[in-house]
Length: 97
Length: 252
Image (cartoon, rainbow over all chains, first blue to last red):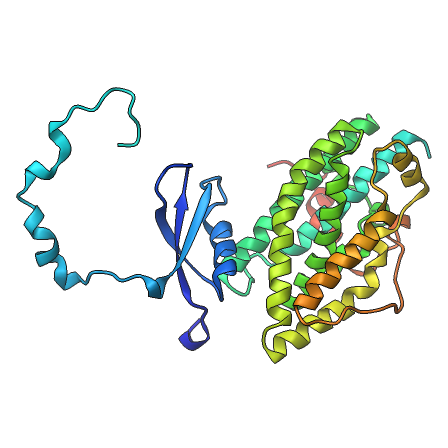
């Protein structure tokens, strides 16, 4: 555990709960390759009937914004209430919005 | 042996396989090489336990003497168990566990594929459910066999040692009884003799992919069909049964 050189690469796991729904990030697993990553993700995150599909993505392939970017990235949208779709009425019976 | 006795024996035998192997796999719980694999082995153990419950419940119903699945698991003696010798072998290192999984699971997959078509509806139903689980178990051990065999020098050596050391127990998996002949004629049981060549081909394919040598011939140990076991089973049952043996009927 302590020697990081001996550890398998990290994979981020995204699980789709129902067909048509978006895949949601639910955690990560270690695995030597993509097939084993899928199996490990299946065993770790879909044991209680949570999934219909799994994506695994090498954690190294993800580019994330840095904490210092929080101001320039996200503050400008704070005062633009007109971008929220709150002015529309949603028909009854529409799900997942 | 009449048809009823043959059917009870058949269900118990298949249930004993999954009970004993499931218990072996549960011994890995908390000791797996990595967290993810720890969970994978425990998942498989639970699937096997579920298969046992279905088979024991059916055996008890066919018997009709009021025994339950628990009675069958906790109060039979070692010579009454009919699990294949392979399933009781010790976990060893991870390669031994994977080799044991490969040999058993390939057989179970072929068996349940056949039993889905059984003329006994309960057997067919149990087999159909078990086959889905077994298909995943097979994928798990096939992938591991390939990675360990075609991995590092050490993992290759350990995997080959594991395959060689368990090979002597593989014929015993396919041993049949006179009761089987009766059930096969009725279209209830699968003929293990027809599964063996398919099993050989499956194992050969995986071992070849894994750059491992398939053992040939050599001494083959048998006896599980007559209740003759290796030394391991008694220890497994000692652990599995001690509570019900010490406090009969205890519930919690």
